[in-house]
Image (cartoon, rainbow, N blue to C red; front, side):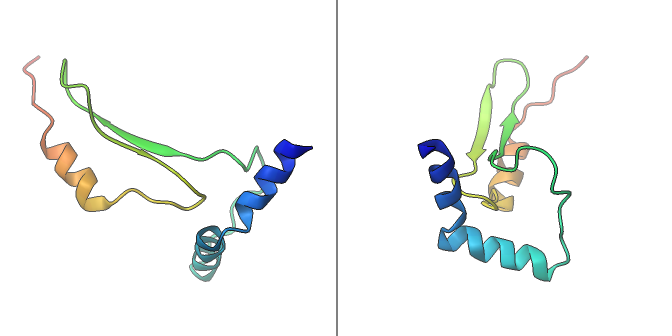
Length: 82
């Protein structure tokens, strides 16, 4: 029961509501299937031993990674010869 309450309380955060309204105004409806409470993320992983160059994990629904940070990390990927 407490887990469900925690998930429901996550939806009433101001940032989440703002993101839902913004998505709705842009016409996004979603498919309303699946879990629905799983946050996403993004990793930019370099070639060979470079490892993780950028890690972004959603803190709330609709939290997006900064595009300039993504591009900067992508430029750091060393090209390898095959």
